[in-house]
Length: 103
Image (cartoon, rainbow, N blue to C red; front, side, top):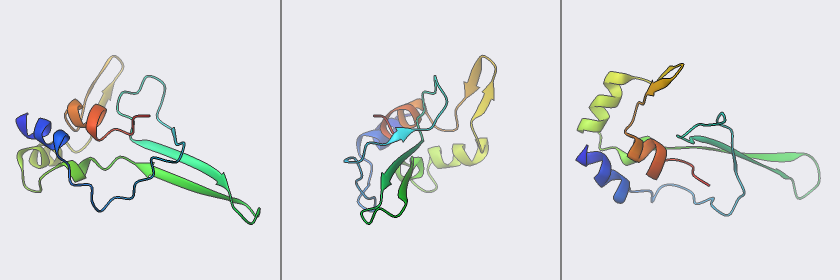
């Protein structure tokens, strides 16, 4: 999984918006180690309603199209969850680390 370690060190996130100034809340279940969804709610400046900011981890931004990780993700399709275990779609160095929406 050298490709995963390399991707975690040097992702190209230039096309992404930096919203780290917003106090997002992750909406993953308790005990989740791959935080991949988050939201932030703020009142609109005009006082008429709210604005919802939604963030989702973009693990694909860390993968090289056609590379080994991309091929393995296509083969697995999804993370498999079992009562006491799981088989992740992406290597933990990405899903629980570099690409996670860690606080």
